[in-house]
Amino acid sequence: MLKPVCIFTALCLPMTAGAIELTAADSAASQKIQYMQQRAGTDHSRMAAYIQADQVFTQWCGKPATVRDLKRITAQEGFTDLYSRLSEGKALGMTQTKALLINNNPNFCKEKK
Image (cartoon, rainbow, N blue to C red):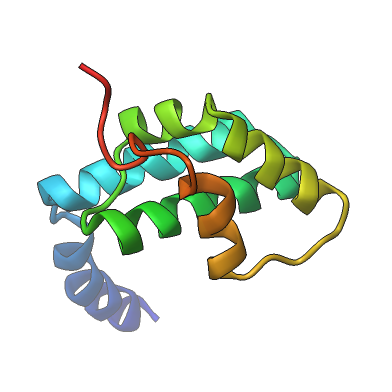
C-alpha cells in the first residue's frame, strides 16, 4: 500500500510546486472581470450589460477595453439605456447595443482630455 502512495506523490508533487505566471494581457483581463463581477454582484442583467459594452468596445474601437474604459462607458447614458432594456428581459444584438452605446457619442473609444 505504501508503494502506490509514494509513486503518486512522486508523480504529482512536482506539478503542484510550479508557479503560474500571468501575462500583462491576462492580468488586465482578470482585473476587468473582477471589476465587472464586483459592480454587477448577483444582477445578471448588469453583468450582461458590462459584457456587451466590453464586446462593443473591443469590436468597434479595435482594442480591448480597460477597467478605466468600462468606468467611463458605464457612466454614460447609453449604458444606462442598455442595462434598462436588458433588465426588462429584452434581448439585444450587437447592432442594437452599438446603437445605444456609440451613436451620438464621438468619445466612446477615447477618453476626454
